[in-house]
Length: 137
Image (cartoon, rainbow, N blue to C red; front, side, top):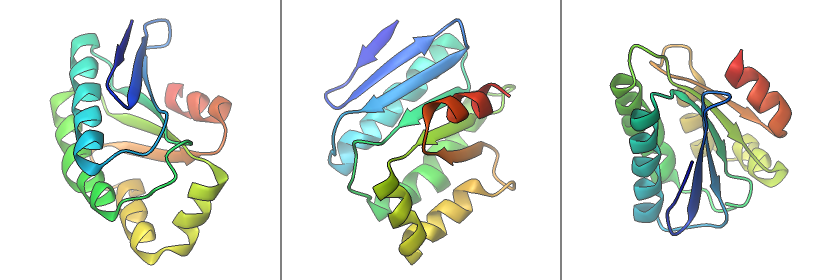
């Protein structure tokens, strides 16, 4: 079963118990927030707390989105999906990974989001196979 927003395809994989969200391009902050809200609605409908987020085609990194996802949206989603633990695999392009390495602001949001102190678990990957393997582990 799939859901489509104007910028994101969300697919439920019942065989794996995973939601896959793929962005085809960049989008304004408000649209990305709407995409994440649609993703959470699908997660609640399917009782699925394992997400693969494919952001390889989104080359613009918004500090506002980084802050909102890691400190507001993911904690909210984690609470709403209890008793399951929210696990998020983020599939990134090499260019995005390079920005994460060089931008102090992006490093800050990433470090916060990847911390084991969070109520959710998130990891970054460059390839879909390892991303899915971690997600299902």
